[in-house]
Length: 184
Image (tube, rainbow, N blue to C red; front, side):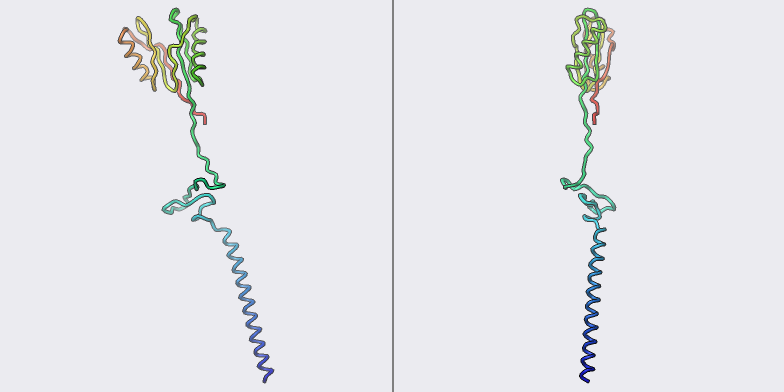
């Protein structure tokens, strides 16, 4: 009988050890299962690294975290460059030279004077230099004047008003614009 009891205890002990081994295997298997599944999880409410979800939470809307390391957040900035224009005349011969789209005032004025000389002027001088706007030359019976403004209509109105104060039969002789150019 003692042997039967020992045998029963040994069987119970073997069953207990077997259950613990099975429990241990289950725990290890469960641990690795969670470990594998966790690799599919996304941080910050389903957003990729370096981004956070919209507030209140919206479906699939994520914003970049400002200053986050490794986050690629390139904002497109538009860059405009100033462009110059100029009008040069020779008052003796009545010749005109003009330039637009110059990258500097110096470039635009030199180009206008050169164009005036190319057109037959000998004493060409710059009447007006302007940037990122429009300019006009208005002729009257006695003299001319130049004006510049944001638009051709505004420049024409200013020039015509100045001309009509001391002249008759004012008309636009030359007009052009030199607007800023988008470079990026």
